[in-house]
Image (cartoon, rainbow, N blue to C red; front, side, top):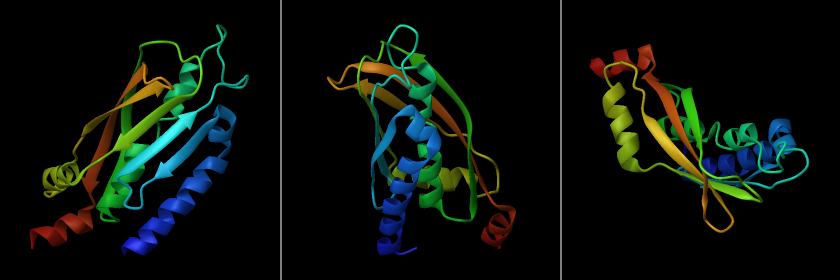
Length: 162
């Protein structure tokens, strides 16, 4: 896909995600998706709809703000010859989120190359990524560990072996 089409796709996806009911209900806002899908920034405000019993950010909402992004970023950078899924995740709550919180996701060419190398034979690869959720002052609120499932589709793996 050429750079202009990919950039347009990033803009459109950002708006679709911002209108996605689970994100609207949680107060999640996608601030930016880089034109090359290698960086994403999200924020979540604190409101009555995502506040827990003690008045801080609800843990499920903190997790949901980090849910699909590494998967989407990798899918767009690898292309249609790959299967990419979120496989597992864990969240470590460090401090209460008492206001807006933010998360930034990034992947680089070295990571993309590593995934392609590890899946070239058609084997699955389970890379792990981490994202930190921080408050407005930069204090760590939560750390989310994500495990992705990546595999080169069989028809693509067969054509690479020839």
